[in-house]
Image (cartoon, rainbow, N blue to C red; front, side, top):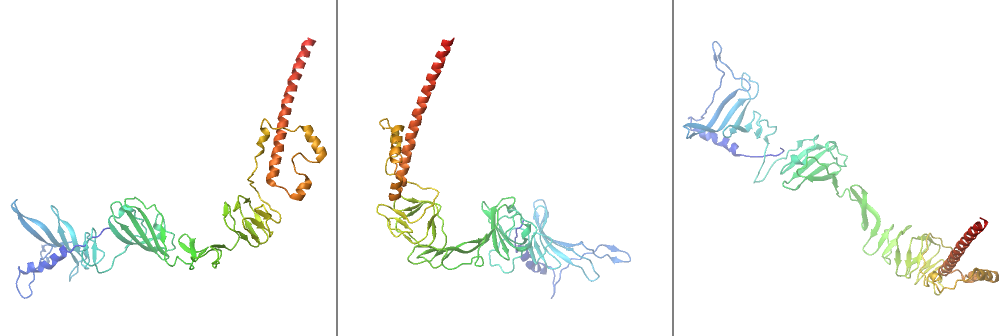
Length: 442
């Protein structure tokens, strides 16, 4: 596991050894030695030690009830390199454990100290949990795990630093950096594991379940002043996946501008540019339309009058309890006046009078086709329908003419229904006559 521990109890033991050993020898410069050779050979003498030889052991023993001294701890030294005529490198190992000794700490010939490992790579190299109650002075080492995207379940209750290659991530951050620093925070319990990737172009963050077998979440860049570029009073928008910049919206606390950074203080909202409204638009006060413009679908002004899609305004139009377009006055009794053509895809007319369903009432006096024909011959138009001269003089009331046309349509249907009934009756009489004639001929 990627967890570290620092302990100084065994280092303190080294400091006490000279005091203990000094009681065994005497003199101004006392020295106690443990000598090691590999036997004796006639004509040669003592045989020299070789690499990997155990030079000696120093054990701490205590008397136990089984009637013998039992070892509780041991210090040993062994040769770690080639043996030369004038010496050799050796390491010192500290061992504890019951019932079997295990190596706890080692000091190499090069002065490297390992705790929890027999092959230290640094002046102090620990494997295992670490706890420091005082101040920490020194450098924090970054492991080089650049090609491994270690899963969240490999980090337990720790903060871990490492050098990492961006392309080695299963889900890579949107960065241009090949290598960056990686900080993993694993608080433990049911909390998430978090990672920060320090790249040339910013800091990226992701999180996942602490016990997850793999990282599956995306990275998100932490925005800094380098990613946020804007103008005072300009409302920000995303100019990229992880950057903010100016939008077309301006708000100085008094007026809001769209397409302008200098809205008039006299207006709460000022729009500079073409505007399309696709929904209902309610105007409860006066509406002034200057120059060429387009007012979109369902423009409702004060009263229940809807102006349909693509209303082109050619000159200044001022609304005072009504809408005047390309004309300076609104005729009495009207809410909208247009001095020119109007084109739209839909017009809604809210009728004041009854819709002509009264034609279908039993007491409705349906004019005969003979009377209609007589009226046409005398007047030159249908009964109840304005003449061409009237339309030319007074104009066409869209609501009224729609009602009149519906009345005539319903009258025509009544005539058709009556004719169909008479036709069916004639067919039946014709069949009866044919049957009677056939019986007579037989």
